[in-house]
Amino acid sequence: MSALTELTELTAAEAIARIRARELDAGELFEAYRGRAAADDLNAYTWVADAAPDPLPAPETPLAGLPLAVKDLFCTIGVPSQAGSKILEGYRPPYTATVVANLLEAGSTLLGKTNQDEFAMGSSNENSAFGPVLNPWDRRRVPGGSSGGSAAAVAAGLAPWAIGTDTGGSIRQPAALCGIVGLKPTYGACSRYGMIAFASSLDQAGPLTRDVTDAALLLSRMVGHDPRDSTSIAMPEPITLPTATDLRGIRLGVPEELLGGADDGAGIEPGVRASFEQALKLAEGLGATVDTCRLPHAPHALSAYYLIAPAEASANLARFDGVRYGLRVGGESDLLTMYGRTRGEGFGAEVKRRIMLGTYALSSGYYDAYYGTALKVRTKIAEDFKAVFAEFDFVVTPTSPWTAFELGAKTDDPLAMYLNDFCTVPMPLAGIPAISIPSGLSDGLPVGFQLAGPAFSENRMLNAAYALERVIGFDAAAARAAG
Ligand code: GLN
Image (tube, rainbow, N blue to C red; front, side, top):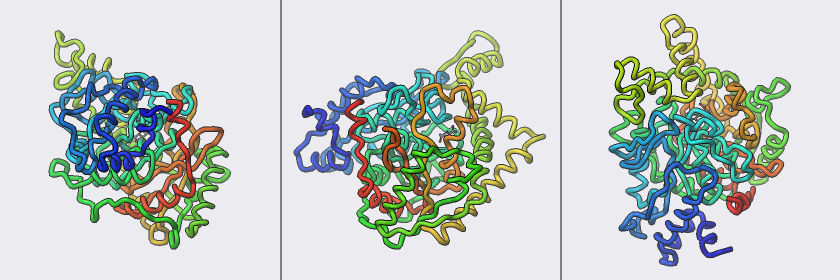
């Protein structure tokens, strides 16, 4: 193993400790990662920094100059921010998203922008105008989506850590498929200012990291109330580094409706189920109790999500009209023709599908029947979780019903693609936090284990995930060696 490879084998927390102890130079670390990111053959990056910032943040800063990969959905001043869309080709925003600004302020350095599904719509990263991202565990397979570039970059050691966004699973599902940790915080914990909007009542930023400690560390510097986002709120307590070594007294609920039985909607793969059950045994070994729980409305979460998210997207995406940002087609013609041609050529097929679905769901004749009903289901789902959390600390499920699938396997069947989100969509509908950690391998591919807790239970959730991670002992070095 070369010295440079060794450097990029450190977790972010380990690298920060070495930089503080003056055993490692942040500039050298940045260069090691920059070299790897620039040679990226997974298509994980859409932009890589030319050089480390000069001067580098001081070793005493909380994040000690550590390089960060940022999903392209976040606006970064003067740096391409294209959200995986042709309609934002070449767009360089005049400001930086609050979450990114918070991390830079804490001593992070911008390593690159990562590829994603267009406007975060997708579960495989195949809906990007910049081409699909490859899974470092097997390059014929997808990394998951929509934060697929962030997940692949972290899994392959092309970044020490990354941030992404999760609307219906876009942090947790790619983390699961790439064998890393991904956390979706409580709605409002992170500011959405400067995050290119998909579905505003669901979108949340969060960390994608190699382990749970790094997730806590990165999240601790992302959160906070922001006067520029009125839905953001201060955490009741700061995010702290997890230390738990057991799960005594922790009650885990396994929702029958998401694990399914004979009429299992998601068809959880046997290898995924086996890994999940193995993790439950390990949790019991640490002192947790495991019982079934009921989320009676969870099977309808997917239908509600695929009305609410497209409805909000249809409104949010109205701003891309060829006037203000990125692409303009037919600028010489009249205004309506220019709008039509820009949107026609700028948006990809999935984005168009969502705009049409959302516009239909909101149309006056169908508003009550579709959008209105979906909102009622959403309330029921939030109430289901509330009832469960009166008796359980966390709800646990496999993150994704299956492991990474082959490129192209689901591109012709949007409904099959949407089923990826079966276990991850209920949580954002309820606004609650959830984390995915690797629970092992199935046929050589990583499986994700999901824990979801009540709003603002991030510290307790991180502790439980940390205790579990230690006994699972997942070794992700294989993917990094391949990357
Ligand atoms: N896969 C889901 C979708 O396509 C979730 C995406 C996300 O969380 N941004 O909508």
